[in-house]
Length: 597
View 1: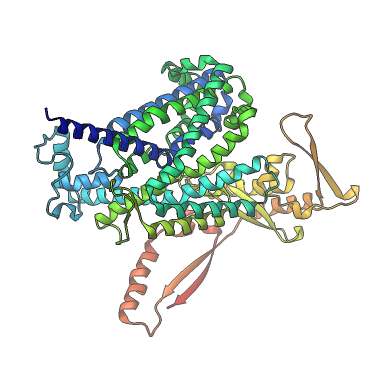
View 2: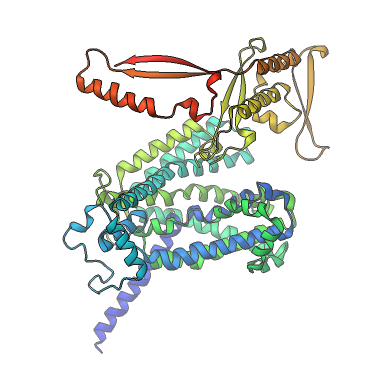
C-alpha cells in the first residue's frame, strides 16, 4: 500500500469528520430552535381543555408517555432514518420531493426534466432502478389522468405558500411572546414598549441573515446549546428530587392506560401532544444548508435526549404539584436558577424562528429553479455547502411583513388566531358600548374560525341577546370583566352610596387573598334589560350592503362585456353574504349602491 495514498485518505477522512461536526454544531442555531422550545407550552396546552378534569398521576404519566413515543416515532424514526434520505441532490423540502418526481418518474408538469444532464444525480442514476408494484401503479395513474398532475402541482404550491405564510407568523409570534415574558416581573411595562422592543429584535434578526447560515449558526448555536443544557439539567434535578418513578412512563402501557382513564377527553387533547414536534419538519426543509449526517448527529446525540429529560422532569414536578398545570414549565424551575433559565428561554424563543427563515430561502430557491417564482438574487454564502443561501429581496419583504403583523396585531393571541380553526364560545362575541347608555347602542364583533359552522339565525340571535345581557349585568366574575375589555373603565367614578354598586373581585384562588373594589354606576340597568327584552320580542333586522358595479356609457365594448356580462353573471350566481351567514330573508334589509366605472 502506498504510504502517501494512506496519508491522503486519512487526511480526507479527518477533514470530513471535522466538517460534519462543524455543520452539526451550526445546525443547533438554525434547525432546532422551534423544536427545542416546545417544552415551554406542551403540558400547558395539553391540559388546557377537558383533560384538566383528569389531573391524576395516571394522566400525567400518560401524557409523558405520549410525548416520548411521539418524539421517538416522528422526528427520530420518520425524519432521521427515512425522510432525510429522500433529498434531491442534498436539498430538502416540498419542492425537492416534487423535483424528484419531475425528473425521475416524469410525473410533473414543470420543465426541469427537459434540460440536458437532468438524469445525472448524486444517487448513482446510471444504475438501473427496480420499480415496485406500488410505484408502477402510481406512475400509470398519473400517465392516464393528466388532471392528477395539475392537482399534484397545486398541492405543492399550496404547501409552499403555507410555509411562507408560516414564515411571517412564526417570527412575529416567537419574538413578541419572548418580549412579553418580561412582564412576568415587570408587570407595569406598557404594551407600546413591548411592541417596540419586538420590532427592534425582528429588524436585528433579519439584518443578520446576510451574513449567511454559517455565521448565523455559529452565533445562535451557543444559545440553543445553553438552553438544551438548562432544561436537561433541570429535568434531571426534578426527576431525582420529586418523582424518580416517571422513568416507568417510557413504557407504552401508560399510553393505553391514559386513554382508558381519560376516554374521549384524552383523544381531544392530542392537539397539545402534537406541539412537542413543532419544527421537526425543519430538519428536512433546512437540509440544503447542512448535510444528512450532521443533522442526524445533532438530533440523536444532543437534542433528543435533552428533550426527553426535560419532559420527564416536568412530569415529575407535576405529579407532586398538580395545581401548577397551567404554568408548569417555569414553576418547575428551581428558584436559584430561575432567572438564568428564563433569560436563556427568552433568547432561545427568539432564535427559534431562524429555522423557518432559512427554510423559506431554500424553498424559494427551489421554486425559482423550477420556474414557479420570479427571478430573484440568490447569494451563496458558503464555498463548501451549496445549499447555504441568502435571498435579499425575500429577506427584507419578510421583515416588513413581520413588522406589520407585530405593529398591527400587538398581541400573540390575536396573531395565533391565524392558526382558533375554531373560536371558543366564550370568545365569539366582543361587546362594547357606543355613546352614553341612553343611546342603547352597542358595537358587537362576532368571530368565527375557519372550521366553525354558522348555526341558524335563531340560535345566533339568542346567543347575541344573552351576551349583551351579560354585558349589562356584568357578573361578579373577574374573567368575564376582562373579556369585556375594560369597557367600564370610562364609567368609574365616585358617587353617593345611593348611586353606586360595589363589586368585590378576588385576586387568585384563595378566598383570603387581597381584594379590589371597583365602582361604577348602576343607573338604568333594569331599564336597559327591559328595552333589550322588548327589542328581542319585536324581532331582529339585518342591514347588509349590496354593491353593484356597472360599466359607464362611454366605456369600450370590451370593458362593458367584462363588467356587465362576465362580472354580472358571477355576481348573480355566487352565494350572497346573507346566504352564507344564514340570515333569514324576512329579516334582511339590503342597502344597494351602484358604481359606474
